[in-house]
View 1 (cartoon, rainbow, N blue to C red):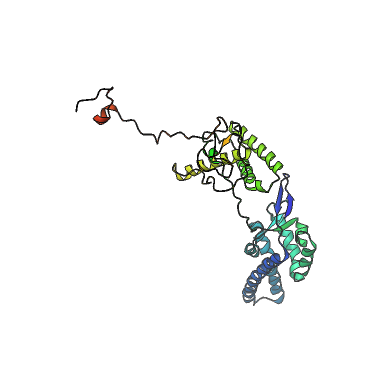
View 2 (cartoon, helix red, strand yellow):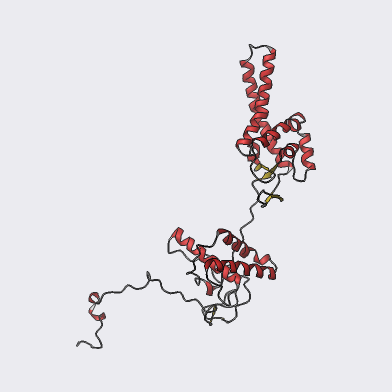
Length: 329
């Protein structure tokens, strides 16, 4: 990777294109340009057959400049650094700060490219690219540009461990509207990588993220709940709400699963009594016998699911209240 720093002091990790991929992209561009130039030259030769030699020479030079120099400059300017060959190879020309190129960048690259690519058959460009740490040719050096790879192998997304079963649904009343997307992304990245972190560093990071999340939601971390488990439970609650908004109220909570995968929250939580609500999961216990912060969460029955009240007059005679009087048989 090549770390570039933008004008806002943001570090960008870009992967510079190597010489083989750049050479293949240039070869594809030259083949297309050669076919277009040959077709245009034949047409102009037929059209200018009645002119003198000087006029024919002037038309040939103009067609060479327009097709082999002007056309690549125009294509790179309009496509923001993606010619036909670069598009096929997954490359793009960007500025040194990672931004899109403009006409002046494409003009310098095209003008220098006439010498180092067309007139020297690419020898100068290959030597300069091999000597550069980021594979830049002379046109890139003078223009302040860099050819980078757009299509890079995507690493498999990390597994987000589920929260302990006794925390599932516990934070359903939290207001998550004030939590920014950047904090959600940081929480997800921590949960997917916490197995790779040093235990002390991971614990400190989880504490900071849990404190930020508690400040945004207005509810402190419950006593006895590890910060990592708190983050996982709140993230699951957010995913549950998003799934309910997208697919309806009957969606299962979170889709994370409970107790089937190992999660490194620690061997257990103080005050937890194993075996209270089923088989103990990977957290060392299934529920807690204590109250605030350690007790098992007992969800209340929503009003929509409770049995509707039936007016007394509409009940069957056998179900009406009798006040303790049994009618005669």
